[in-house]
Amino acid sequence: MPATALTIRELRRNRLFTTSGVVIEWYDFMVYGLLATTIQQVFFPTDDAAVGLILTFATFAVGYLARPIGGLVIGRLGDTRGRKFALVLSTALMLVPLLVTTLLPTYDQIGILAPILLAVMRLLQGFSVGGEYSGALTALSESAGQTGRGRSVSLGLATAMGGNLLASLVVFGTTALWGQQALVEGTWRVPYAIGFVLAVVAVIMLRKMRETASFEEVAESGDTGTPVRYLLRAYPGATFLMLALATWSGVTVYTLISWMPSYLETVVGITDARADLVSALVSVVYIAVVVPVAVLGDRRGRRPLMIGTVLAYVVLSIPAILLLNSGIIAGVLLAIVVLSVLQTFVDSTTTTEMTQLVPTKIRYTGIALTYSIGMILGSFTPALEETLLGSTGSLLVPAVVLIGISLLLIPVIISFPRQVRRAQAEDQRDFVG
Image (cartoon, rainbow, N blue to C red; front, side, top):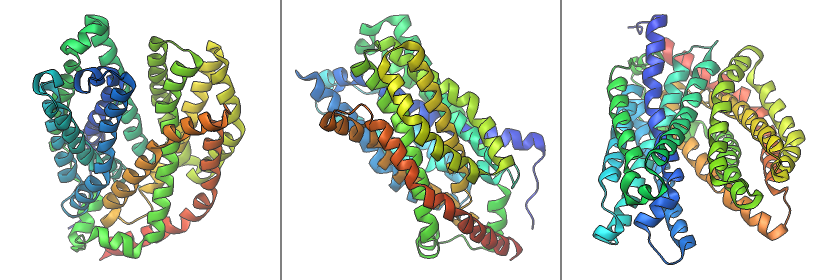
């Protein structure tokens, strides 16, 4: 029986429900990063603050190790049990680390058990996130049809950055209200408590989500049983292309949101408060621009936009990095805006194309697995850039990294239309069958 078509109002509600879990994922991600120095003092007290901070970020990184596992497990459920089932499950799982972290005793209270439990919570958070964001993008893509796919997917991207912005505002408000010292004394728990409440709301909203028509049609055919095996056996080329696209996004976004703020603070000499505002500015620019860019991609084609983005990185990366190093506020702001806008072109095109490279019956699994691995690879970018900066002494290292990874994507950009047509042809056979 054909799936019942949703009305325009129902589609809008469904998109709102679908993106609710994305807010929590990126909120939690940013809160941990913004509270890193406080968490170091509370859970990793040591005479060497640098060592404590390394341990703090190492604990943060363990969550990334669990992402591909979560992507495989939850992605498979998304392709066999449905997008709604997987999204509700992954968001509900995020309730546990948010609640436990809110109530977790400190190192002074329970000793070494405190950082161990914190690491376990980061693992669980990473596992759940491994299937949540990719599932939201999958559902948003499938709810759009062919004409507005980019616009629909970009709502998930804007919501993700909205979670970052919300975290920045909550941490800033907590600090402004009680002071920096109060964070160490216990107010660091407030952002996590707020995150838990938001996650409860997100689960309630996701339970009201309607299943996508694409999944229901494929489920009618009964061919949804072995998504991982089928993905790797039948679509190895498409899997590689998805991984390449995710890695491009990972390298550029971590340069923007991880490397740049810390570099401005530690090397250029931007104050802590202004460095925090950098993250907020990136979020605001991204949210304002990503949907119009995606609409442009729907109308003009995403491949021309991707080629234009590669050329823009080649032309603008070096001037942007030079402006960052100038220390002049106007120049720094201009560089931030330029790099943020370029990021919207990368994300709106790559994520939308990833949702089309494999057929519906393995789409959730494919995106979850490749996106998780791509983000892990991208997360090493700030460390790589800092290492190369130290060894070469060249301030242009980040620009070279951005240019290099963009140029490597040219063969991918050229080849992916053929894989998209193949996936669409299989969907047609499944729907007819």
